[in-house]
Amino acid sequence: MQIAVLGASGHAGSEIATELAARGHKVRGIARNPAAIPQAEGIEAVAGDASDPAALAELIRGSDAVISALHFDVTADTLLAAVKRAGVPRLLVTGGAASLEVAPGQRLFDTPDFPEEWKPFAAGGIAFLDALRDEQEVNWTFFSPAAQIFEGPRTGRYRTGGDQLVVDANGESRISFADFAIAMVDELERPQHSRGRFTAAY
Image 1 (cartoon, rainbow, N blue to C red):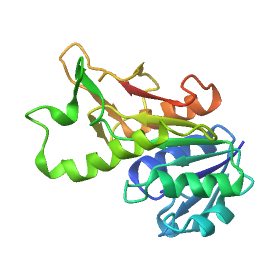
Image 2 (cartoon, one colour; image 1 turned 45 degrees about the horizontal axis):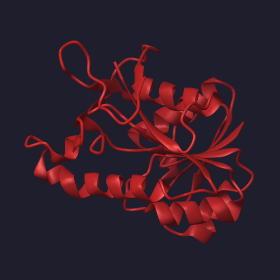
Image 3 (tube, rainbow, N blue to C red; image 1 turned 120 degrees about the vertical axis):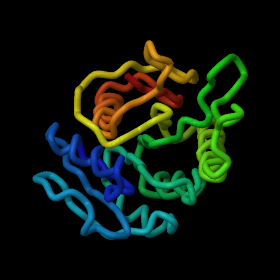
């Protein structure tokens, strides 16, 4: 497939681009700083600003899917406008864990220990997911990572969930960027969560 990866210079985006290329997909990595996009066979690095829907539409046109690893200063409305204008049928989004439930009706965002300094960014992710849930034209998927996502080994193992935080036997919710990328590309290749959200952790 031909896949456009937005934010391909960041931790998640670079791992996703690398995983896609390793599986034989053609990747157009898009970032404000294309020099920071991984250099590998199958990855084309392109400069682009995702805050401009018209310009972004031209960069992603012809793609089979768009995978976003952008920060949430780029809103769902902006990204959806570009995807629709370009005629791309699928959008997969690197989301946040804050909107996942830790108990029935209680989001991680609402727990007493959730850091105040993270709340402005996390609120953007929650608003992004809420906007996607009203979207009927584009086939979207929102992928919330584990509560802790870190630089670590590529193990190829993970467990998935829906709207609830996935934790291990110690009560921890963790996944490496490399394994997050595997789960994202697995979802691209074998869709299980069309127009829905899922999560993955060890």
